[in-house]
Length: 112
Length: 113
Image (cartoon, rainbow over all chains, first blue to last red; front, side):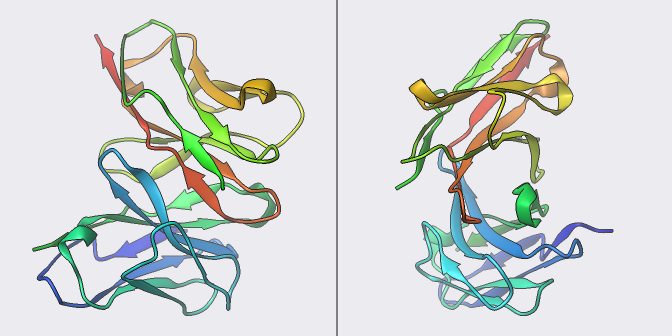
């Protein structure tokens, strides 16, 4: 039982490059989330998927797209990376009524 | 719109001293309330949560939090801090009937030996 896994752990991109951050959970959770964490800003919700087949914008969706590939996987895509997207990205999942979020270890992304 | 305020960015306490971390929220009704802890380089772990009922909730690692509706607060407390409690603490709220959560900006706790 690996919980929530994220790949890659670290990534350096040049401005304008694209990439996809992968997230998978093996806990049969319905809801999945992408957050970014920046110093002094806490965690800000980028996108979430309350259930398979649905996605919704969070607080800071601009510059990102997501895909809920199946119940296990929720990917985050940067189409044209910008330095402002330098951050640590966390994926999380939630089991139904418990509302407890389980977090992955994070992806540290640097855009130069 | 929901919002969460953690007014203290940094707090320093001596080992063995008591601790209180503040959290205030803005929401039309009582939301779900959470405290998470993040150790350096790690993801977040749930300490405790409040949905309804008894306003004093117990969590892991000896932490507790009290929900005060009149003050829109959900402050985290620990009677005696251990050096291993040094971490960043996040308060979060969730709108009832949804699976959307908003986090505060966090309070970084430093523990002096």
